[in-house]
Image (tube, rainbow, N blue to C red; front, side):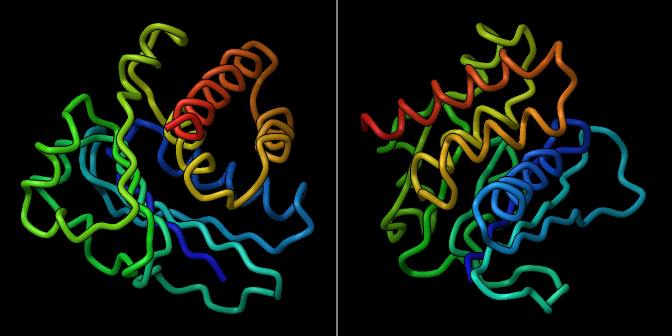
Length: 185
């Protein structure tokens, strides 16, 4: 089983991305998928978590994800508020939306030990292509480019299933752009 944790802020689409990934696995990849949020009465902008599990076997664990194969950080300022490295497996992948260069990120405590670090300025890409700073689908593309948890076709099918027609093509475009940026290194 692969377990993924999403760090975002209320209102920026972290749970939507978690759900898209789970749907892509369960409905379009022949796997089992599970996605759920973790938040209380927080307001828009407060730190929230989302989780996705993907497995070849039925998923019976419905608890929070504690040991992660992949952690996706939608807002780099969260790294000052929460320990995004908590539970990241030794060979796990950390995907961060940031414009900071790798050498700056690696100077943070513990980040020098991350073997699979993927950095992408998702905010700039979202602003340019979507006209908004909501980066959930951008970082979803980066995450699948880094991990191959599901195929690009499966994610596109999940987008078609869940998003309104007005949003589909733009979001599929940024997913592919982020996916390609990560694949190209």
